[in-house]
Image (tube, rainbow, N blue to C red; front, side, top):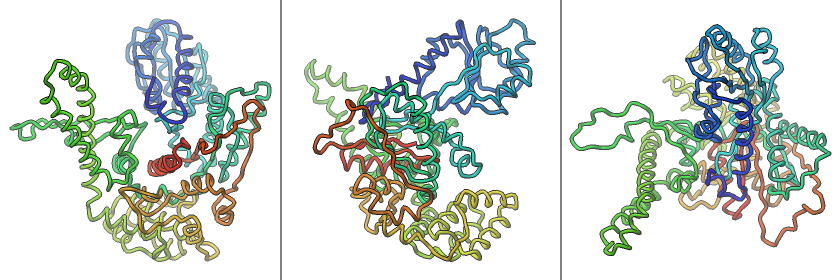
Length: 576
């Protein structure tokens, strides 16, 4: 049992156990010793629900990464392929199977598609002459993965691209299936609110799926009161801005994958006297980041400027706790100190790690370039000089700074101006292509197609109306003891989270004008509950809202939702 998954208002261990049970049942169908061949992309998500110990209990002896040509030698009865339904992976699997057949003693092959079986993939295996080799061809519905006590993710990194660029709605279907699984475990969600075209489609799929299961009435008392479905393209501004929470900056600088981060090893090398820095580790330091670690749970959602003082206080507390050993005189006191030692040592290790991470981040955030970039971002978000070519962006292009950095700034300016004037847009495009290469014509085209970069049409900039009505920019922000969600970007309140906040109080009727300006429809659906399951709310009892992002979410938005949840003392929010 993962204890940190049961801390929140919703016990997510129930979901984790359900997906683990399904995995065990499949493994038991393949009797005898087993080797699993992994689609590399799946190893991270699977690691969050099943450690190697669970697989070992079910006779998994070897694990390999899916690669072309022959599989490594393994004296096992079953070979199981865990793969996404991708045609290019079927070609590799066929190569593996054919080379095993030539090798000698026959093995039993099985394939598990995650999250769905695909007729196209099975046809490809048939065309390659290996479909008949598989005894079991099944699907494993790993739609929503519990990350933390208040956080779920589909880990579908291409969802935004598929929905808004390629018009592929597969990820929306998976989202609807995942939400139906949640309702099967936690009860029907009485009210569904949504904003955006994709949100409308997911809600429609859920209603249709519910209709198809009319025979079985869900008799579980509802845990969630509301579901809020939000399209990522309703708020394209937030993911373009630099996140300023501790967790957000770790992600900005190093990237967090499946709750793990890889960091430069030199900061974590144990310091020994007189070794002159010899034999420094070369392999990246890999750390898991979640609320199972007490200190991380305390600092992850704070603005980075407030983290130093917390680490300093923690250091004094831990140091004082270790000093207590000198005061332990009796056997009982010594015994009590010794029993606390493992926890104290873990706390000291945790403090050392986060002090090192904070130093790494500070090296970046105190640089002149970081400050200049942040100044430009904040000018755009507060509505200053969004309609002309920006000097700092010009300089970045001229000095050939990272293309991602340049594109984020240009797109941010475009979003904060409801599109760029044609001559400004043409100037930026020409400069980018001449500096970074003409192959980026396609990059710029894709950004326009996704709505991140566009010419201003109709000559009207709607952003100031949205900014004022939703109070997206706050001039005086208290980063140490915040009173508003805008602390996560040091002034800018994430539009998506402001929508969630206003929905809970006073309701969206108060912002009808802005909702009409933002892309896509807004809607409300009620799902009727059997009489015995209708909640009688106690005075002062908080509602639990599930906030579901379609197309990705930032760690700063998650921090802002947690902050709202604490303000209302409850209202657990899960995001994807």
